[in-house]
Image (tube, rainbow over all chains, first blue to last red; front, side, top):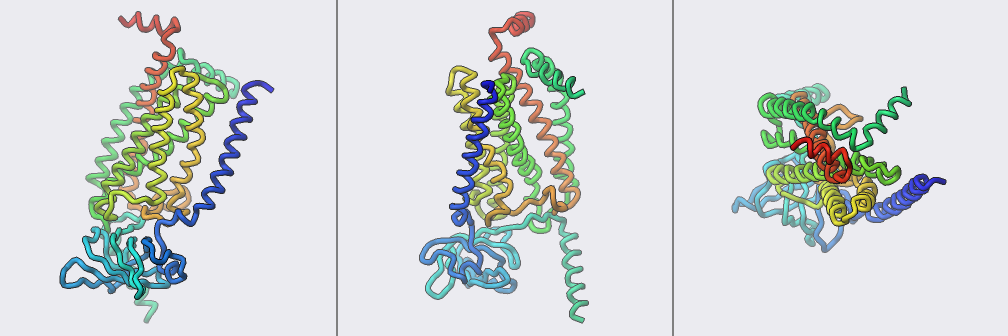
Amino acid sequence: MKARHKRLVIIVAGLAVLGVALTLIFNAFNSNMVFFFSPSDVQAKQAPVDRTFRLGGLVEEGSLKREDDGLTVHFMVTDNANTIPVIYTGILPDLFREGQGVVAQGKLDAGGVFKASEVLAKHDETYMPPEVADALEKAKKQTSASISE
Amino acid sequence: MAFQNSIIWLYFSSPKNFYPLAGKLIPVFAVLAVVLTVIGLYIGFFVAPTDYQQGDSYRIIFIHVPAAWMSMFIYIVMAMYAFVGLVWNIKMSEMMASAMAPTGAMFAFIALWTGALWGKPTWGAYWVWDARLTSELILLFLYIGFMSLESAIDDPRRAARASALIAVVGVVNVPIIYFSVKWWNTLHQGASVSPTMAPKMAAAMLNSMMIMVFAFWMYSIAVVLMRARNIILEREKQTTWVQELVTNKK
């Protein structure tokens, strides 16, 4: 065996061992790699209790209410299966709106209300001009109207 | 034919022959980089429509995504060069790897920086510790680690061998970056453009982004070749051809 073949074998074997080790580590850490929990996770008691965690989902249409101080907001976060009520005092990001993705950090209180200390907007990977979005929206309404007829 | 090709590759794996070739290629790639950047940014700023959700702030995507892609792509190529240098002891390969690191690090930094500037107005935060952002930060640290280890060891061959190990081991991070948005819940959105799905962007937006990818690609080649030429002069300074080259220029 030539020296360079030996080197190749040693390096490849080393990388293989490292790869297996990393796979195992990532499997073990998998549950900690989750950036947020969905309302269904919370309902299933998979989210941590008495500890700060992030709740992610969609802001339910028509659920946003502002208090008179102008800063405190109430809304529902949904994943279309379960919903969690959220209360937050502070400035909301520009992309926060009903029907859009949101990730809130905070704690569940005794009444099951999520008290958020930070609210982040999550947007999707679709980019299109407003006219196209309007056209799509119209088409969607027409099809749903024709289905209900 | 294959035999002839392999002869050509061997020919250019000698620093003496690679040096003039690189010198000839640099202006071509430099011009392409400038032309494509101008076209790409023109389409990005004046032709591409505003986004239905984000308005104009999405336009940073024309820098952000190409920079992020290049930071990953350059890392893979750098690791391949480092691997070839490590196994077959090819000096030119080691030099190419070390010539690529600063450019890769710069693109990783640009991706993180533009991402922060984009994240604040849209998400509401400059930085979050989600899997995509964290793994891209690790990529920047890998580049920095590669460069610092290399410059910490005086003997260039030993330096190349030690730093090559970082480069090769660090490759596992690249698929982690790429698939992080699929494997875990992240604040970062999924891929708009991927090999398996139709792009989720308007055509003008996509065109601008892809032209910018090629522009950054051309820029990277030009800059890496320039840096490789300097490294050749530095590491081969005891050879007669470099000494002749330097004295003739005076």
